[in-house]
Length: 122
Image (cartoon, rainbow, N blue to C red; front, side):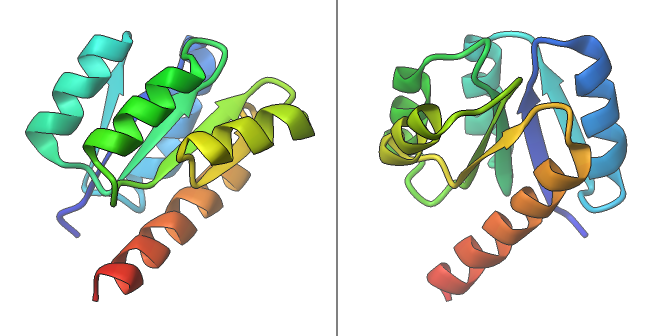
C-alpha cells in the first residue's frame, strides 16, 4: 500500500502508539511537531489522512487545512472530547474527533475516513 498518514500529536507516548497502530495500515507514518511542519508535510507528501491533536491545534488550523486540501480526511484527537468540541471540529472540516489515547478508535476512524474519501472521489 503506497499510502501515508501525517500525525500532529503533542504527547510523545500517544504519538508513538498511534504511529505503531497506523504503520500496519499505511505505507508511511510521518510524525510532526508543529502546525507549520504538518502543513509542509501535507503539501509535499499528499497523505491519505491527517491525525490532528486538538490540544495542540486550533479550529482555524482544521478549517485552513480543510480549505486548502478539501478532499483530505482530518481526524482530530483530544484528551476528552466533548460534544461542543466535536461539533465545532466537524463544522471546521474534520472527518471525526476521537479520544487521543484510544488508538484503535483513531485507527478505525482514519481508515473509515480514507474509505469514504476514496468512494467520494470515484
